Length: 458
Length: 156
Image 1 (cartoon, one colour):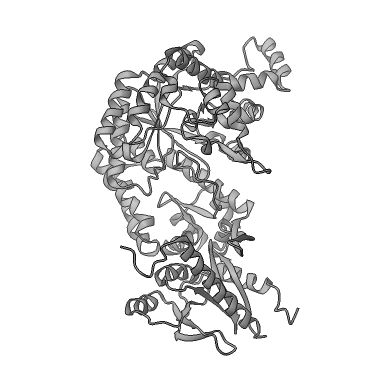
Image 2: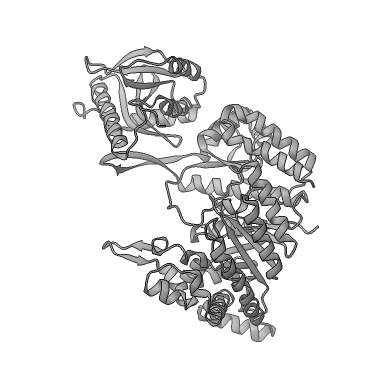
């Protein structure tokens, strides 16, 4: 069995440092948002070609963002005017019709009827695929390094100044309980039209399946979805994204449904989970879901994601606790580390809590004091309902340590030796050890994961 | 069916929050009059915000104010035990249900009634035991934050 692919989703430029240097070899494939590529193509092209040693990547075309109405893609200017976000305007231009007139000019949501015309659909799919295939290359050609690449190309006789994504992704739209009947046909048709476009650029096609939790857990809808995608599309890989699906909060039935979805789609092509946690990693690595070949996460809050942004919210200090495979509010992390006897000595901390590179650097002599470095904040006052409110924001160095610890912890989850028997034992023990201090809401997932993994068979 | 104690509209919730904020402000102003006690309101602590913290005879005391939702107050106060020596919920004088007495005792949280009379804003309804959960680092953060606040107007 080939090893599970470790995918990381690129978010913002500040995250570059966690994707390069010592972290470069910890992951296999980089996932980029079309909006980020459109907004800063030169920076991303340089990241991939120069700093990231040509790390394989692909671009999520994010076509679903046009189906939710103007509110989802607009921002308010300083003068109080609503306008489409600049990064989205750029992909509207690149994708052309029917998005351009419907969304860009009329500020309306795109509808299934807009894609019924075969020619319109084919043209749209080709432009979406072309954007993924060429946007970064175009940026490279325009970059300062272009002359250097041409020099190298003449010298080496090969094309060093061009990059291609590992996959191109067919346009896709979100499938909810109420809209599946409307959008499924369009998604299937776009997958068909995109095969032709992808072959033009000689890049394998990925088909992205984005669904609500209701569709996942409704057996009839799930069967419809599996049957339609497996019988009517032929991608190189399926990319699955279940809306706001936290494996830590999911019920047993939801996880069983997820396994069933992966297995079902996997009959036609391997599956990558676009937002997944340790449950997916374990299911793939233990052979419970052999069809699952990759799991993606972001750098913060990145193991699940809602279809629509829910706003930034207030960032809070969190610590990824390896035994629970979950991020905890820092106060809960303190309680957990204390319960695990991690404050007794640095050796105890490294044995019972974490011995990743970052924890070895931070926890040296006095874990009870040093652990604070993962939770240091600064208070910021702001006004709410006319009153001054003070909230804590993690210091930049707190966030840096937490992300580094998270990245090393994830690296271990994808690579360290894993045996079903030991893992199930560890999951059950974590749940029983920490349930009393953190509450079952924070620990029960371990028990549920163990049950689903053993019930679903290895 | 919603409990009669649960605020059903945004206006009601805002009104409750306003009354809570008034209690916090009232307690803050009166404790500031005590020269040997340092006090701060809206104090950040481990991702929560403590309504009022005061330092008295070397101890760190955290107070969470609530008009009526005592279960919510308890949930918040429980987290303050990581950073304070003593933790209290403060409410206007009222009948306390048996379940609340039991929960307070079980969680190691004391109860104060807000008092409009006298120099001290609280009357003790249930003395809190010293927290067995205090994490020295968070306690130091809380103490330092209170110490760093401006001295009472009369002294500054």
